Image (tube, rainbow, N blue to C red):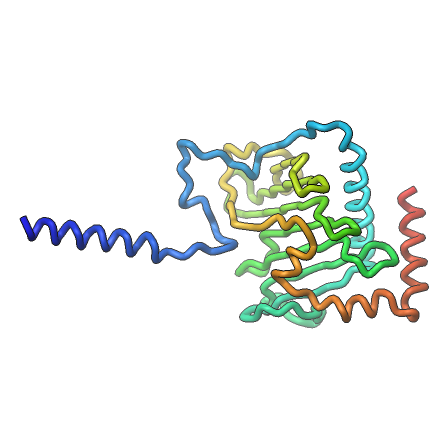
Length: 249
């Protein structure tokens, strides 16, 4: 009887040790631990806008994103930073650097003619030097998050040669999600059915403010601010902004 009790105790200790010794990767797959019977894929959910009075608020946010996309297309007023492998410090991106040295890359854009961050794009580099995960954030002039965008692409979806996911979260001034869109499509932008695809599910944070994001990465904003508002560059930057605003009209 004592032998059976001792054996049971050893088995219990072994199971407990294995359960608590497993580490969770912050940007790793969660699919292995999914109970498919009761699983709800929150990433692919769509949330319709319930309060029509907030429609103009969302329209303004979409205009901000359009402005950002024009700047990115023109590669104008976009500040590039990165984190190198084996380090956790955000530093200016050196164009001649090899992608293999990068852990992640950031694009930052300021609100027009201010030193307030409007947009941060974070690209996480995988082992094949491809941008598997991309997170975009739009902030208002008070530093509050108005929009969070998640991009994910994989060659291992089993439903297409390459599959892409796009989720867009819209937040109100209290930081609550008021609308969410979701798309999944192939390389030709043909829609796919998420039920037929295997898509990775990682841990990630939708920060409610730029301060919350900056507490994680501590961007070297002082140097960026100086170059952004210096008298030497200010006139040229303002001219570019005016040209872009005229194109939007």
